[in-house]
Length: 333
Image (cartoon, rainbow, N blue to C red; front, side, top):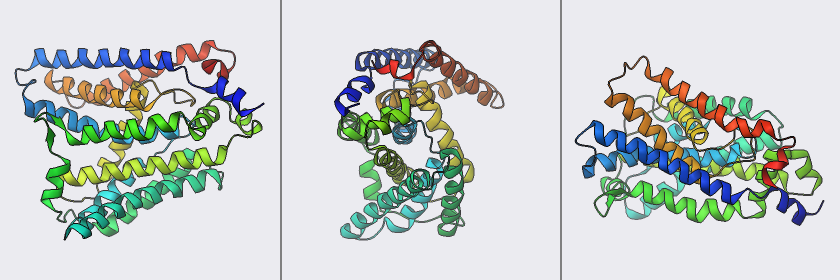
């Protein structure tokens, strides 16, 4: 089968994807309206900014996770990569302008190297992604503890303020940066040979391989990009907190939040379907659901249960159509 023929079969249903994204955007606006009616301070600039900023943190990880999930893989180390790069950033984001630039590149490079390590183990070591990334997450957490056995560090406050400022006094810079990532990275990638191959791998890896598509390169690139995005998340966590901390619970929570965001965003955990745009909306919706639980004063002990039920429903709804097709490639015809 030629690459052109395969491209026709595995190109995602863009119209359906756009429709789903618009539906999810409507759901997000509905959740925000519920929040607005539940609290008088919702529409204040500071509250909107905090809401978007907190959602953007999860969205950054979810976008990176999307690249991997589309290939029918999973990256359970993103939270620990974020933790490791946060601890590293708390050491290197100080000094002169040149030193700051070098530090930022070093933090992003560390995230990229972590992702590349995952890719090497999964692609060339041929380990199951869930096993490989659980193992590497323990390694990354151990390195984070070596860097920051106790919380601490200091960073350049001017740099932190620049990246956490508000555009037009309302939109967090982190959200604007996330939008740039989607426009400049995700959209070109999804239309490239590697992007089409990633969708093909998630749909039918053997067929993609038999079609002479660059399966190994696409898988490796997906994990590398996921690590790089987690590095960006680690940078922003440092900018927000002004410190570094090897927090196990926080790292695990961010990993789970990234998976929750992509599920709500319509990205199939079976691979081969979904987009980073949906993952962004899913991250913001997941954050809004958490805020609603807080506003309605639901017992904190019950909140994880309620969020789990929401995720199970989202997975079930997304699986209905998938279960009706006879061949996974039918999603893309």
